[in-house]
Every structure is written in C-alpha cells, then in structure tokens.
Image (cartoon, rainbow, N blue to C red):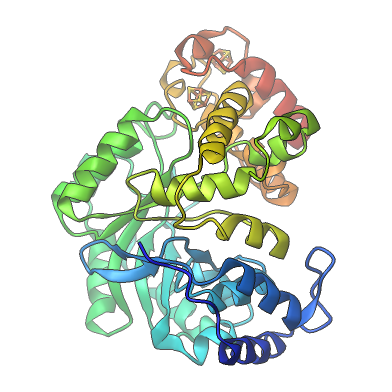
Length: 408
Ligand code: SF4
Ligand code: SF4
C-alpha cells in the first residue's frame, strides 16, 4: 500500500480557508494550539492517508474513517490528509454539514446512521416509513443532498430477523430510487444471551448471515487487540466474499493505559499505544478500514501518522503489552458471559459504558446511557457464574459495583 505524498502548499491554503470557514480560528482549543496553523501542522505530520477498497462497490476509502462527531480541528486536518468517509454524518444535523465537505461533496462518502423505531435497539422495531422520514430529515438538516451509505445502526438481533423483516431494506430501496441514498450497510452488535432480545445471536453469526443474504455491502463491528477467533474467522470469510469490514471501538483500555505511568514507562522507546494500534489495525489484520476515536490534534498526529505503516518490532511488543494490560482490566465486549447471568444484568452494555467513561473520558455519554438501563449493575448478586464464562476471567461483580458507583 502506497502513501506519503507530502501535503502540498495549495492544500494548506485550502484547509486554512476551510478552518476559517468552520470557525476554528482562535476559538477551538486543541491541546495547547488553536486555529488553522495547528490544523495544517497536524496534517503535515500525518501526511496522506492510504486508501482501500470497501465492499462490493469498490469505492476507495481512507484506511481510517472520519466520524460526524470528530472534533472540528481533527476533521479539517483529516480532510487535508485525504480522509474521505464520514461515519455518523447525521451528527451534523444540528448545525449543518461542514463547509469543507459541502463545497467538495463528491469527494466524500457520507453515511447516515439509522436507528430502529421505538425506545432503544433492543425493544425497537423496524418501521419503513419512519426510516425514510428520518433520512429525509437528516438530508434537509445536514444539507448534504444525498447520503452515500445508509447504515442500520446496531444491526439485526438474529439471522432470522434479517430474513423475515425486510422493512429496513425496503426503506433503503425507496430512498435509493429517489437518489437520496446509494449503498446499504450496517453496524452489528452482539445480542447472544441478551435478556431483552430472545433468540439473539452473536455479531459474527449475524454478519455471516448478512453476507450470505447478499444485500448489504459492508459491516462495522467491535474489534480490538486480543484473541477474537470468531471475528477473525468472519473477516476471512468476508474478505473472500468481497464484503467490506470496518472495526469500531478499537481502543480497548487505552485511556486507562495512558494514565498509568508505570505501564507507559515500560513501552518500547518511540512507541505509543495509539500509534501501535493504528499500525496493527491497518496492516496486521484482515480489516478494510477502522474507526479510532481521537480527542484532539495531538492524538490525531500520534494516531494517524501510523496509518498504513508496517508494524515495527516495538509496535508488536506494545500490542502484546496492551493486550495483556487490557485483558486484566477492559472488557472485550464479546458477550460470552451474557447468557449465563441468572439476574439478566446487561453486563456487556455496562462494561461498554465503562469504556466510554474511562477510556474515552465521555462521562456524559456513559451516564446518560447507564441511566437509561432498566437493570443496572446493582442488580448483580455476585453469584460469579459470569466470571466462569469470561475468557479474560474479569472480576465482573466487582467491576459492576465500581461502575454503578461511578455512573449511577
Ligand atoms: S455475578 Fe452478577 S452479573 Fe455475574 S452472573 Fe451473577 S448476578 Fe449476573
Ligand atoms: S466480561 Fe468477559 S465474557 Fe463478558 S463481554 Fe466482557 S470479556 Fe466477554
């Protein structure tokens, strides 16, 4: 994979204008830096992001995707680096899509994330008319004109549901005929053993059914360092079939690692967790592309400067250390434990919210999601059954109690 054409002066000029248009100058705190010059400097340090084909359409997308909730400075730097796929572009509904994307619309792939109708992704249902209405509203508010990808957010509960309820696909077909969407995709969570989803299956099982069904072009799923044979097998299958794969929630436990001076001191010289992670994701796995959450321009440079670059010995060592560290502290969200809880505590959900709070430092999101649970961590009776089934042997009852104190 080729990369590294340096960023040209004319591109700097373009991004400066875009940053000014986006209202960045002097307003946005980015580490210790503000304004277009910081954006340009970050982009220059990262260089051009390599691209890869995504799914059946063969569209070339950056190996690291952008997102609608990426900080404006990181987004503008990303555009300058060739970031061209925008996950969750409907997040721009509040203020309209960024000027830097609108003025060069055809150069970007923008995705609308569409939820089930109803209270949440467990109890919600598909509603063709409502999905169509949401996408139209998102188009009107973002000003994007069309969405390249219509994504089913949180995915199906089972292969059976995919086969028997085609409402989402019909909504896509209607919108496609009107030229408002172009490609169909999904993000898939695991529902195996979830008390609110009878008959729920694992993400890998459902995604395999999705590929065999043949209508969706690519899928997004939870994937990070550490053994995940089920997802590795799925990715090999997807690659063979030409189905596109995108990893999300990739930074398992990194926030906690970076705040652990003893761990950081042991890392090989010149290696950082985020940089090792992006090298591994983009060159050491079967993924087509990935989403890595970054908070500011410093993290943007630290992370994306490794995109598409081979793993060095130090990176491989760091990934091994990160896996070991994360396996002691951070849930893999594999849901293996979930079917075994007699109290039907939503273990995986709660441990996902822990990651939002402790790794992403997004307490607002973690608190909000935790508050919406109908069963919280205090429903755990410490029977220990889940621990016996956790491949990491995480002390789940203790964690649930700590998270409840943190988020309740
Ligand atoms: S220890 Fe708690 S969370 Fe685990 S199975 Fe028992 S009740 Fe459920
Ligand atoms: S607690 Fe363990 S078994 Fe349960 S989802 Fe997390 S890693 Fe998997």
